[in-house]
Image 1 (cartoon, rainbow, N blue to C red):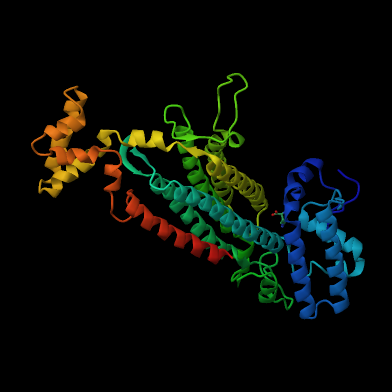
Image 2 (image 1 turned 135 degrees about the horizontal axis):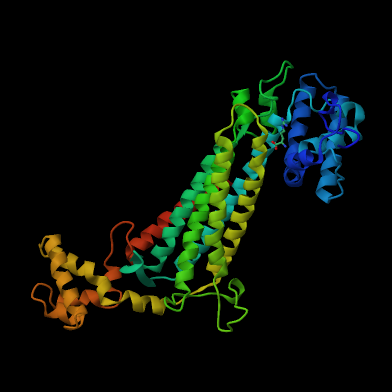
Length: 463
Ligand code: ARG
């Protein structure tokens, strides 16, 4: 037990806290990251308190000056913490009170750390998700640039990881862009629910003092103000939602990573990685490894872990604030750091790799990949699709049995013939796919236009 009690709540206690309690309880090591938001929140609270006559103008400016000084100390790293500084809120208030002893004692009027921490975390999350959405857009721009630069290059697309039908490389890259567009949309929608001020809810029930929660909300740039003081201090839906958004974004990056791992293998040979974004082996001199892509895949597991962990924390909590809620910050902070780094590294990797379009085309021109086109050729002549499927399937079986090449068998087939065999010429099958959102070059050109508009709108929405 420590000798003297420096905690804010020491008045009611006889002895000091046990060492183990203090270590378990303290959140300053990780929540000091919200110091700017804590100071911002206090600034607004004090401004409002002066406006409603609870503080004099003199007291308000003394506290504002002290807050400025604390911000400077924190930002420059000279802030000295003390044993009783449980969390960022305690540390800031303690220092403000040292700097402005009389006025500082009034800073916490009508406020609890319960509404304070929720305010700080919402301010922090708002800024972070906004920046994250912008980073996703930057990555989409890289994918778009690569899609524009590869022109009509094409490759086999896969189902069950078996070659299925050829598509333009741009179409394949855009498929990932659309998934990322939904991530941006989701982040923006989440931001809407983050953008609610809980300040003024007090510990859980509001206040007998003439506080103006609408005023602090406006001063802090929140779009809305809480409707229920109990919900305001216990709601961490915004953290769970942000963790979900980042998990799904992480899953999308993981799937891109998985493809890059396959594509950079000797067996596929579809891409060559830039030296700056790949690693070597300590033993095997020939190796060039796609570590970034593997980490993108690996980090998704960590993000999903944060989401499930935090939902589990929330599920048993009665209203209103419980200390379990302090467990919101570490997963959120780590998820934000993780997804940021992953995005940046993957962006560099995709931006710098080389597409081996000859290898892609060679694989895509495998005559078997045109089998669906052959069946559709027969459909155009009036044959029911099921019968057409059967006719082409029989030819594929003969080719596989060594009775001739598929093009030769098709040319000799009474139903198909030489005209149909042309569908197996290089690139022909891919060019034939013309329907909206399909994989041919004409459809891809229209898709590129649509995607550019979506991206421009998303960028405008964020600025
Ligand atoms: N450090 C706490 C947290 O992160 C702040 C709120 C403390 N509230 C309380 N009633 N002890 O949740």
